[in-house]
Amino acid sequence: MSFERRQDFRANVVIAVEVRDSRGFSLHSTRDISRGGVYFDRAIPHSVGARVQLAFTLPGESKAIRCDGEVVNVPDKHGYGMGIRFLDIAPGDAALIDSFAKELSEGA
Image 1 (cartoon, rainbow, N blue to C red):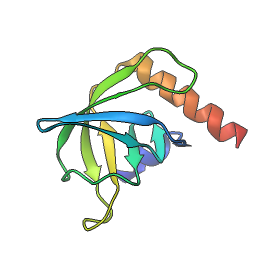
Image 2 (tube, one colour; image 1 turned 90 degrees about the vertical axis):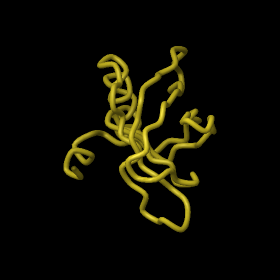
Image 3 (tube, rainbow, N blue to C red; image 1 turned 90 degrees about the horizontal axis):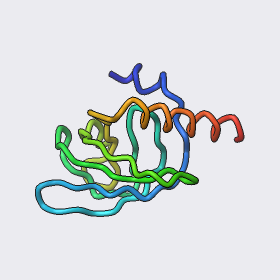
């Protein structure tokens, strides 16, 4: 639901994310990230509902965050961009992303 996405602090930041599916993997750059998910504005989108595996490291951190995701938003079906909701992210990783997003938004 859209109101859930807006509750989380969203950080406008470029982070490289590995996206894996049954066809293989690709690297995408984020436009923004929150504890609930990530948005790629230059990605060739997967279809809404597609399940993927994600792996990325936040700036300044050494531990990679790995979780499953679901494509929930493809604003332009003929272009680029997709939003992915994190499905099984570890609570500690979600808290780390939330803290990172808050720091970035407060520093802006």
